[in-house]
Amino acid sequence: MNADIQEYVKACIIKGESDDVGDSKEGNKQYAIINTLYLSLKSNDRLSELIPLLRHENPYVRLWAASHTLRTAKSKAVRTLKSLSKLRGMVGFISATTLKEWKKGNLTEL
Image (tube, rainbow, N blue to C red):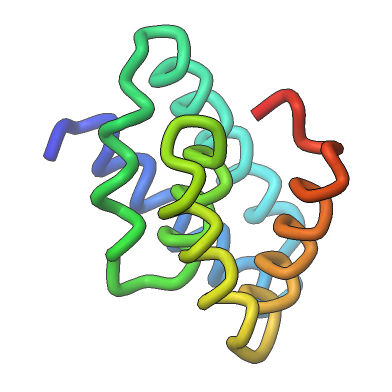
């Protein structure tokens, strides 16, 4: 796994942990890292490197990878988000909301 993908995974995990405990300062910091890495992967046509993360053991890694591959691996990403939306807590809520907004066409920037 490339260093930037490892950094993406780490940031997703910390972001999820921060969200779970309500630490918005740390969550925002990790979001900035995730977003920067996503934009870099996207601009270098490397989003396919996120697809294996749809099977990662951490649900927040799966959530972010699914969100970021909705355009490039739609069926796998949607399937992952549907599965995650059944979980309790923030990850389930965010997954369900992401799916809902995707279906409405509100996530065009992804």
